[in-house]
Length: 204
Image: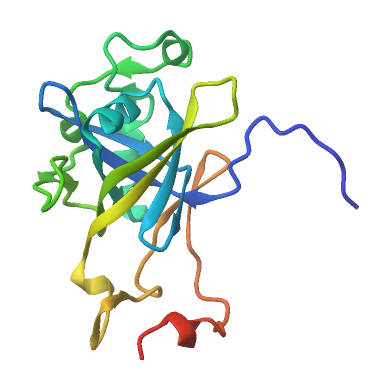
């Protein structure tokens, strides 16, 4: 039997992403988020336009999407309720956010240079996607939410994730992404069955 509810949040489960961008003074900002989906070489990101990450992305037109595995939950938690905006926006201050200028340091993560964008990658993340901004779409008006379309221009992966003999394919059995499901952390379980799509899109 089904029932009608009015859920406070609608987060049915997406990958956690650490977005790195450059501040106006050239320092790095790092922010966790989990409203994202991919299609071919593009990704759609959903965030508040009041965030430092969005302001940086609109100004520089560049970012890195760093995908953490489940072992980085402690680092993500260190970044939770921090903002690179100073002063802290009133809406965030009311929810307990505070300003932090050195997010890499406080999370114990290591910045490494990117190849095609100015923002650094996160060394500890097994997947790092350099991206450029394509478009910004106002979302769910009236609100501060925006959907940002970015195009992936360079993909870095941990060599352990590669399919043996097929360097341009990622082995899904070796990739354990961190998932945010209704604001709680989850990881992937074991493979349930084979898929008829795998032979179509997998390595030949």
